[in-house]
Image (tube, rainbow, N blue to C red; front, side):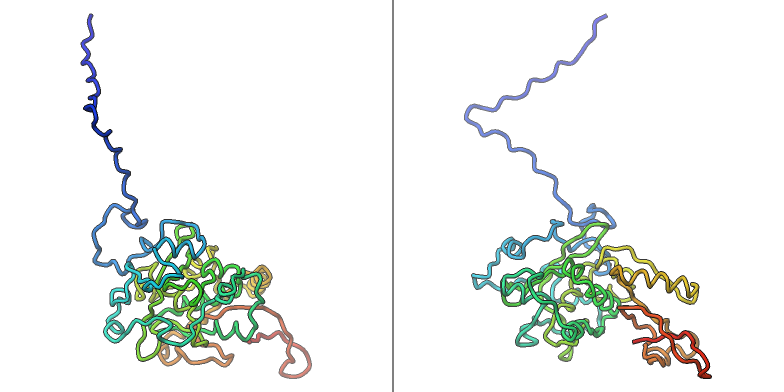
Length: 343
């Protein structure tokens, strides 16, 4: 029995002198990594509220800042215009809040103060590594990280950044040393923990200002812009400044540190167990943040924002820098009793 098989066509030969066919183009790389995994390229109605699906560079590694700048066609030796971020423009879409959009201006730090500063700029200007510089004094550290939340509802970002600053090596991974003088092009870069990978986010240094004050968070040092630019990059990661409203300290800590976040409710835990957990966490450079629950009931609005007898404000987040057990005299003066102090 014969098997009938169709003969395979011979490959066509190019004409003499003709150029060889071009290889097929590689598939386009999608920058998105979120809801549609790069399938949908059209704009979304809620694009300014989308979470973690754009706004990071293709490279996962943070190289030298000069290489990053040269890749954008900018050079410190050439008088080039300052870089403007096309993905997160100085427009109302980046704020996504009507209360601030029509009354805000976008200014660069040089337009706000005469000599802006950034964390680690001394090392960059002197061409030194951060390890070669003397650590900041307690006064400088307190002034830089005594932060005030802005009008965008970003208190959780301020608290997470201040807690991260207690461990400089962790903060340097998120906000590497950069300067407004050496190799300054208007571009700043940051890194965040996204889906188990460190991702780089680049932003320009234009910040929203309303009534002469930054709309976003600010530090006690008026010329330090580390936190405002860090918050802008974090807002770009989430789509807009308005997307930060209603966030949690736990999520901000996770995305800034890359660590595992665990929460404890003191009223629901035995005091001995809670003290043991906290006492073992402090020496291990664990980032600890404590919040005071706001009052509930009809006096909720009246009690919110008011200081308690121990000096704490309900609803405010605080960084825990130490833990100790003290003894104080009892009320009758005949013995000792355990007590708690907040400093």
